[in-house]
Length: 149
Image (cartoon, rainbow, N blue to C red; front, side):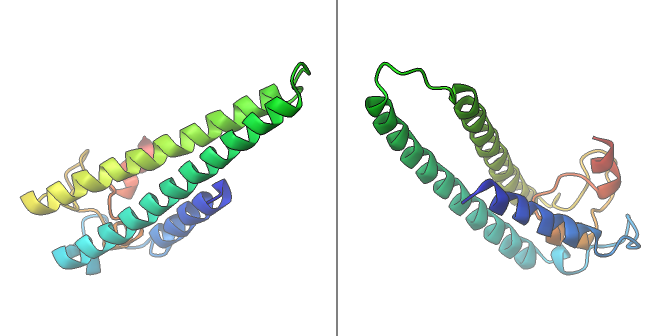
């Protein structure tokens, strides 16, 4: 899956978060308050991120094979696109690490569900809004505190 697909998923989540800006920060989450709903949302997001990670790994493997073949064809010739190749690899690695961080946040959210702390902002201790939890079920912060980070 491309960087555009990852960014599109991020944009969709942001739109969901912003859909109800008048929702009070301390108000009880709506649908996400239910543990079963929260688990379903976390499961969906985990699957989406794992699929994205697998696709990125496959693309990286295919790119590596192509580069090896091109290196053989251009043996002895200087590759003028070394900087571009390096940039693309670093960008891909950055996205991979971001996805892995999000997966770790999902694991933490499952643990909080089990312990009873799911949906509570780690900074201010207030309840995270239902709209925010539906958009990004693994979030650790309310919108107000997330904006400060």
